[in-house]
Length: 167
Ligand code: ZN
Image 1 (cartoon, rainbow, N blue to C red):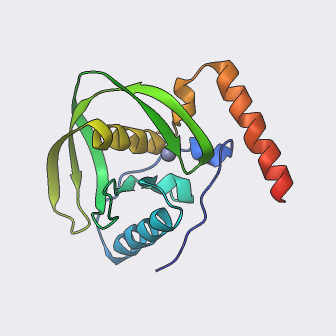
Image 2: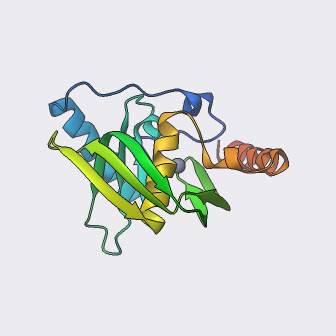
């Protein structure tokens, strides 16, 4: 397994759209494992392939306390949304920033698992928010897009400053 490097906002590559995965083969399974390792090491609770510069429709999530309940969704699709919930979100591509975002409280999602078998699940609260956040990445959308232009500018400047200091 390998730790992949994570793109940071405002890297324009984070705006790229991801393509469906036609077949879950060994290369995809390796990518899933590398993404999980990268997410655990970061540490974060979710990671989408475009965040590691791979434009395929694949996300990994683990919201468990013990960090031993990985969920992998390939070609995920939200087929129903219910309710509204506002939660504070963060993102491995927008380090150190946490802001409230409004999303559906409950969703039904279809996808393929790491074994290539279809999944159909209904989830709510943190898991629902996390899946919506990660699927946004596949469309080139970031949680900061839900914030005001002023707030987004402030975040961009802060991250660019941090970046200059670490170079
Ligand atoms: Zn994110």
